[in-house]
Image (cartoon, each protein chain N blue to C red):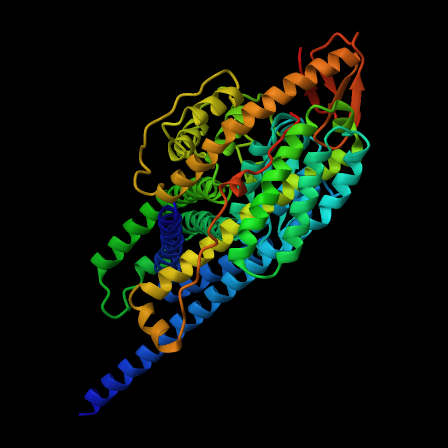
Length: 188
Length: 408
């Protein structure tokens, strides 16, 4: 008689423990998703901040490339205007900015004086690195979302997720194919 | 990819459990043999293990780094290296960027240290910095950060302690056995004992004394190799570009310099075996690192694709022109996610490469018209090479890297 009660109590305790373990892991994953999203934002803002400097440095050398530089500046203004609005709006505009930046650096290859300019080189390295960081942050964000979605969809954690209201998160979809191009100009 | 990493971690746990079990069993048997009490043996084994723990953890990372003659670098000293470390930190999800150190040694190598993820450090030799381009450097750094993320340093320290304890116990056992002749074997007043039981324990203990140290060492090296594969896999996962690390390893394989400050203890933490001799395959069971050819093969089988772009790029970057694509081998089924991503990225590259190459040809023409060659080193120095400079590469005055001069 007592054995039966003991077994039942033990089972209840075990279930509760499992429940809390799964709940905690879900919370951890969701926080990771949110944190990695803000990381993308940080890198995007950094890119916005670097661009004016770049244009200033290049202006003296690339006198005949006004259009290219204007495109970059306009795209940057558009990106700053939308920043913070959310994935869908930002993806498109940031993608265009990436495209114009790539073209800018390709054109800059024709100006060896500009290439040898110290500030330009430093900025170029910074922008390349920022572009890489954006894609890595996006990659990490998508990985986190995948882990989260796995947990939310798979048994037995989907039971816990359903009871406590954890949702699936959205991947950061790439809208414009131009955004995939990362300016990878190397001097080696 | 993710499946493979999970399996690797599970296997490492088993290896540690195996070592721990071996230690306890060994302690018990020795205890039976020497003190006629298995429990006492376990206690002694645990004490030995604790002492080794204290010794191992008392040495900080600082000692390790100073032995290797490493100097810390800030972002301004070497922006590209620091940027790469920052990029990999983001890609791997590390909470904090590890400290970056440079070792002034022509032998190309790199290692990671740090017992927890917030107090980690990555060290690169100056030889490595000179030889690798940005993608390869990224692959190497990703490998090291993979070590940090997978807590390999901690794991290998624990395994080293277990192995050391077992070896020490074996030594004690041999000595006690030879001197004492097995006091426990002669006592007959233990309940449930009997001459037969004692003899069996004796035999088993002797056998273990001989083979336990060997087995422990094999376990240790097997685990070291497993973690190396895992770090390679982590590198490919973070960069989504396994070719980077593959070509870096290939360049390292042909290096002949031996790292002067490495020894057997510190060897597992380096990216390639610092104790290898050039031309040696170093694939035996006592090696801390798996053979380079296999590592490269596996990496390349992950990033394989029918696209000519991948082949082209590998061919251009590879030292000595070895660019064959190996069909999917032991990692079949695990590479789904990575493959698609790297193919997608690769397809974009050749269009860019073409554009850039055309732009570069134009700039080469302009340079020759201007007579001076403008050159930029990866460390941030810019300089111009006069037209009457005869060589095909020039040494950077700041960091010493040999920069090839384009157009020659």
